[in-house]
Length: 305
Image 1: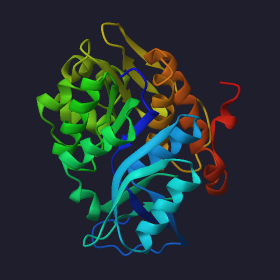
Image 2: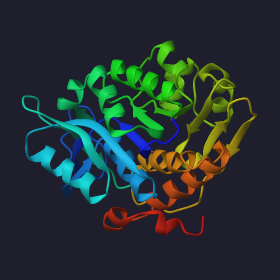
Image 3: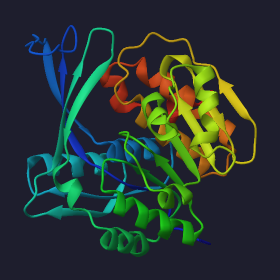
């Protein structure tokens, strides 16, 4: 694609998150007593689009919301981050996607999502949106929308010469045809384990899983939370990148921050290692911030990176 309209197009999910703070995640049959709750615009697609824009990339979103209060808030959040939402359609029947996330006192979380209108996205319409809004240097996808949509979008982006990034979250089995169209695959431990068939718990096991994830044929990034990350550029050697030492306020959204920051650098032509170093720093700073500071987090906070 000679002159794409955007640096990044995100095709993915939009959810309104209900955030609940509790001393711990509920055990089976337990009713835990929380301390506070709040609403937050999310969905992996929406989060990654917002973060890409905050990192200075010209960003557009392809997605779907319901004609309800949640949908209005999700659209407003994209507007506030200067994400182009021309290709976000409004479903007249299905409700907007939503989730409930519980954060414990250590900053860890668990969540349940109800996808709603996100599951009404279709391959043909999504590809049409890609073409109508002018394409991008980088396409970002996740696993919170139907796989046929991802496959069609990856095919269209690949044909246009765009760089295809798949954040394979949440974990699910995917077709070899889709994975063959991916230029950069980003997974965490759980996702790496499902796709590779190997137990992935630490740096050593992550390195062993790389060949089973397509290492050598595409860029692979395995994020290990507080243990850092493992990466392998296409045709290159595997590398370990150490974590930044930081006091965690909340790990919620760290992965989406990483993806948005990573893609913003890939869109500029940065090699995988440099893009990962930038994203690693961005995610580390993000998890140490208060909720108010997260709402203002941008590339300005990374001027020294």
